[in-house]
Image (cartoon, rainbow, N blue to C red; front, top):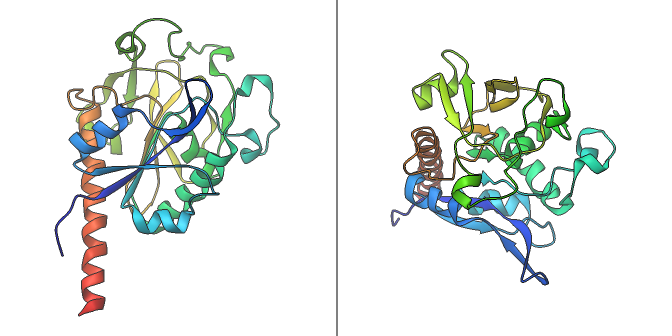
Length: 261
């Protein structure tokens, strides 16, 4: 077989081009992080169950990047009623990503969640979310600055503290790091097997993994795709994700050769 890069499915978001042309979109920050740092081929996934199925995605891709997005996971997915504070929703994405996370965790297929993707991992595993963490006593405003350049919006803004000896400390090589922050919601109760492995100064969960998952199942609340090739926190995360996807790809190919032989 020809040696190829592993394929990472990048979860897309519904978008409007020019205000009226429906599209599926993902930021080029995500594709460049996957191609340049993870060493994988990025493949944009239209997250609508009318176009794709979880079973098909699992066969086509070696891993999945659960990207950020403006719409939030609908609170009905974790047993609560929607309020104005919950913001906008994308029920089509919910229908694809939540079962996809559970399937990947069960199979050991690599997943890496970012921002909304971080929240999807928690909800998929049975956890809940706060609709607006800046309204909680003692919490800071983690939202993206409303004005400024892209560089200013994605600038480093707060510390994240990893658990001693935990998964993230081992990957990044440090217990205390600095990250950007561009989110409004946050984890209320962690899902089953979801381990909070990093928090901000105000106690907001920022890094999680799924305990006893047979494969790479990590997520962060910040946006490591920004400046991923040069950021000392982002780069090792995307490198480890790429290695996990390559291992899955090679295992799949070895199994195919064994069946053919």
